[in-house]
Image (spheres, rainbow, N blue to C red):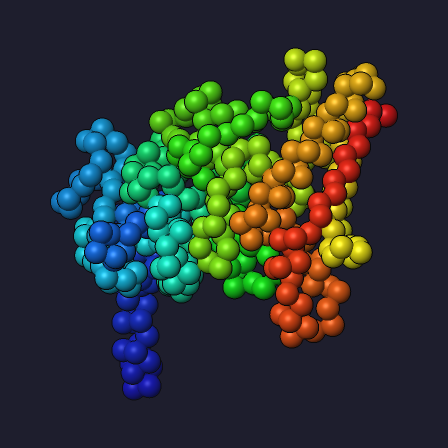
Length: 371
């Protein structure tokens, strides 16, 4: 009997203690978006967007009728900024439900970007599958701009908007984990979606690819669409690809299922059947090749087919050559070239970057009628 009493004294407090992760949901602030900026002093400024749950006594930046609150905090580094942010949020901050990670262009292209990405991945419970977006302006403004509408389904509008940006092919479908592992990879360079104004004018007069420009897109819930991609090299943003160049990059990477073109002034939807990349040795060095096979449900004349095949091939070659000039390789050619080396040491000694920058580019496009 005495043993039973001692056992009850030990077990009852354990049963009454509950679980910290399951209790008090109303006391937790589940952030849906996280933005990272650089401060004028060279520190880190973090901004989070959390849904409202009843009244809050914290300082808020959102409008009174918004279902969200935004909070910001600064620090000398990421760890200090995160600690200050946890103090600024009146509820216990949780990063396990983040859908969007926004980096300002200054933060993405600066020397602190590799360290910032590493610290983000090391953060406890941070959702590593969050989509990464590089913003033309501040990340804090981007977080406020992409505030979705909460209905009974939490943040589904934001998820659909991000998926739609990537599905059109004019943005990159890159997560924090993708960015982290590709940054530390010796094979290729990652891409991330771009949001905001274009850093340079786009010239698509001779390209038949029907990619909507930012001004012609319908704004959904006040959100700025993701158009174009930021290409990283060495952990930092190296260049920006416009929507057509991003589409070509995603096509070569094998990440597109459909391609929108124009034939005789009318839109034509093509299905991507097969994409093959190759790296071949030539008398002048290395040649990069891409073979693209498309199928068309509509009947096109031989002249229309030939014009579209030539135009798509030229657009892809132009996108590859622009990345070559910047020394960035987001297409996947590096993985093919690495297979020709017998060891990682041989790959590092192969001077692939120099070979890639000087390589000739060959693209073949075939459009066939669906049977």
